[in-house]
Picture 1 (cartoon, rainbow, N blue to C red):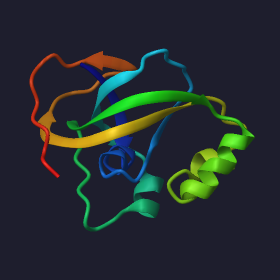
Picture 2 (cartoon, rainbow, N blue to C red):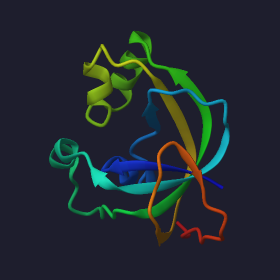
Picture 3 (cartoon, helix red, strand yellow):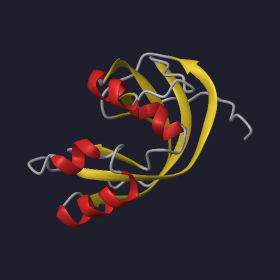
Amino acid sequence: MKVLTIKQPWATLIAEGLKKYEFRTWNTKYRGKILIHAGLSCDSLAMRKLFAKDLTYPNGTIIAEAEIVDVIKVDEVFRQQLQRENAQVYENIITDHTWQGYAFKLANVQKIKPIEIKGKLSFWNYDYEYEIIPK
């Protein structure tokens, strides 16, 4: 299964269903299931702004399964959509009009029993079983 490493707090926000897009400067034709890996590093500013005491923010751990259902080129129209959806979570993309890239639209997110593992850049593979946590 393909895995995408994402900094905290973004990985947890995806696992909790609070962030529906992951942003990259590169495009992908891949559509389908991926695992969400919380990387070893974190976005310190975002952690201070978005920290929720009732959430945990593990590092170096696969924490969720999701499905990439679309990839959208980020433009001003899409930034306006993000503003309406969740201005706090998408603030960096909304306000940085010089940033160019793509939004991977994620759906069918499910938490899994955490798997501690070192991540990698871009997509990487994890070819072992994992356990979805029932809702």
